[in-house]
Image (tube, rainbow, N blue to C red; front, side, top):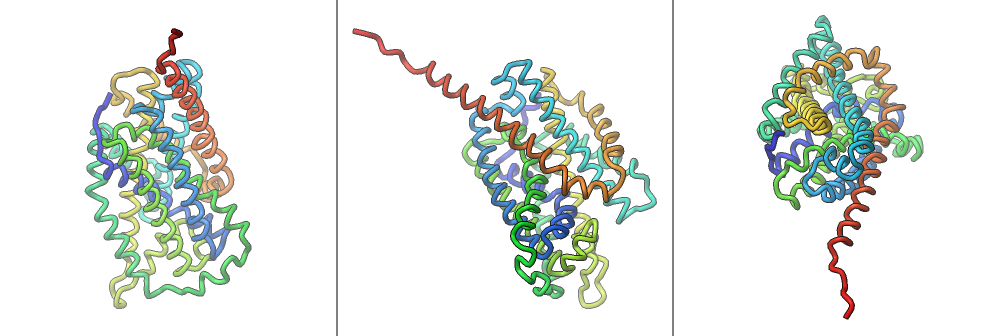
Length: 373
């Protein structure tokens, strides 16, 4: 099995890029549809939930003692029941990766290259993902570290360029629809991407420095959450809640409004580049985790022979997953949260209980027995 390691800093960057990923383009739409001008508040609530969730994942990681989630589940529950639980976990990651791949296909065929077949976009992008997973986690981590400064610069440019078009009245009235739409819509961001962070229980054993890596996870969630909050806030401030809710990719439409000195326009390529980079890292983290997890599930020594067949399976599922973008938006708003909750909270909670029991039993066994005089 691949024994490459990454630094806590690289791990933090992967968490940030994973959170921003597809969410930077698709999340503002369903949020604005439900919470209107208070959509930014929904994300703020979700980020707080995400931080608590990350602390829970960190505790599970500590109990796993250097094992991946797959290895720990089999260790606690044995071959039969452990593998039964892992079928759901690995299926969740596989389906999620396929849906994210479809996101990029929809974006490219809707906004960039409408005449290009969806299949071509998926195959081309998946070739890069498979190659990245083949090179290993160390290369993925170094790539994230290399691209992160450029992504930050592009986001800053994006923010500064749109500042003159901000209309603060777009956020009024505060809580105009009441608090309930804000609370109910917060499940959207909690479901995607925060509950999806369960994937990093496959990555964290390969991160150096046990204490720092858990802090890096929390910091990555905080920074990624703030980035999503600011993106949604800018969509509301510039486009307004109605236009944000109507556009499939509102942050891309937001970038189309950039105009510098009246002649430098059409800079939506900026947000396109940001999204292509961030979504690549989200898919490659999912794909790498799926292949390594299935290899461990099957007790294989190397995950690389699985890269091509699993990659082909993801391409097929991504094409047949849903009929159109409107269906996907409805799916994210209504169905994804309970599905993600089952696999991102209930399933790890079961494993956590098993790990806690095993830990306490192990401590009792290691305690020296008192001998009578």
